[in-house]
Image 1 (cartoon, rainbow, N blue to C red):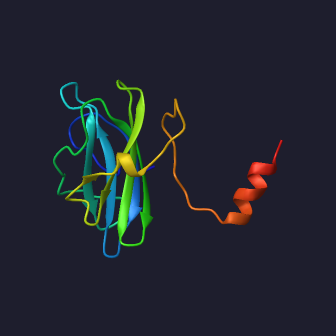
Image 2 (image 1 turned 180 degrees about the vertical axis):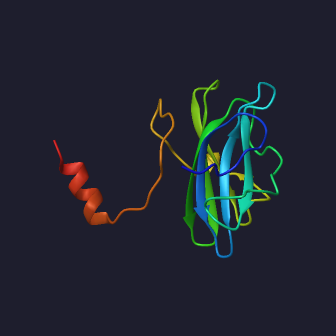
Image 3 (image 1 turned 30 degrees about the vertical axis):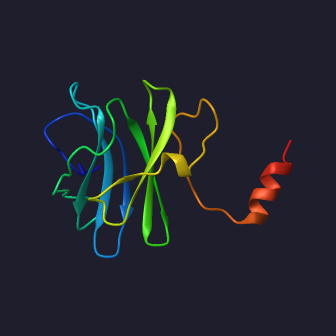
Length: 129
């Protein structure tokens, strides 16, 4: 087992994604006054992670999931106090744009992972009892 990063405070719900030249980790800053998402960067998926971003989601958010669509990344997350799921878009993991109105999530959705699947697989899943 290897420690990937230690920011000196509690971090939960991380997801590491490979970019062209490095790795980005979206994480929940769990300190009481924070409880929002940040991103940090590393040369390996095992760290060390550095260049920690400012907070980029509203208060009381956690559970990031990331999906690349073309040149953009969509980071979805749980807004647990508001009881809704939301998302932001980014090209560089430094500037984030609210994408909530462009997304839809099932009512009551909590932490989850977004992934791409073929139409054939989707159709088979829908047909399952």
